[in-house]
Length: 110
Image 1 (cartoon, rainbow, N blue to C red):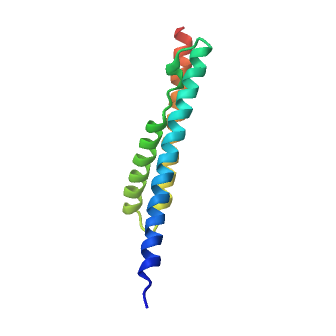
Image 2: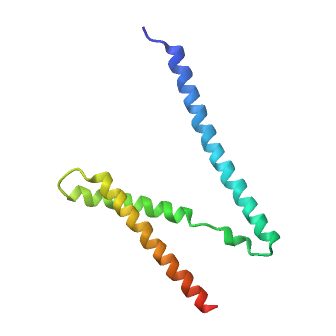
Image 3: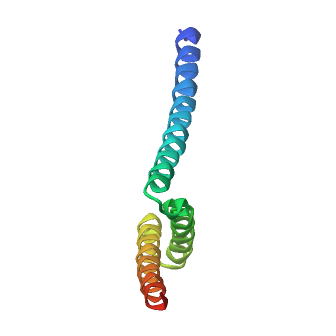
């Protein structure tokens, strides 16, 4: 005996909760970014200082996961996800040191 009312209601609730979560994340992201920029303007600083490297880090993680899965496919054994995480972590660490070197170079130029 199949309960279609329960399954359709559960599906509807899951869809609503996922959409509400996505909306909530975007709402918090944009309102927080706006508050940060307003605080920088009030202090007399450049509001573009609040720009983050979020999408660069997301891209590095994606490329690292893909590269790790490709490397793991060439290796014997089932190390796919592990190699993906390792290569993604290495990408983020290398980017961190690159960013530090770039910041130090910018400070020397001033």
